[in-house]
Length: 51
Image 1 (cartoon, rainbow, N blue to C red):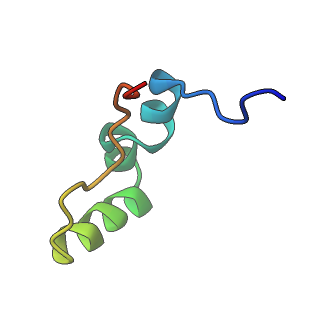
Image 2: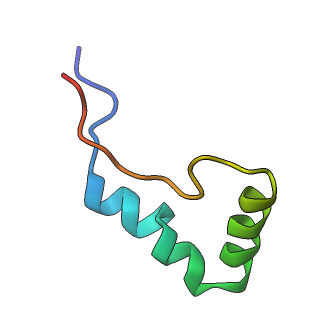
């Protein structure tokens, strides 16, 4: 059986990262909504896996 999810940090940040969100109007509304909810993370931060 193969692993179902292979983390690609660059791809993840390119699609869902902060800079990408700030490019579009809808992305900025997402960031602002998350700011108003006092979220610790406004956008995804692709981190190194712990394994």
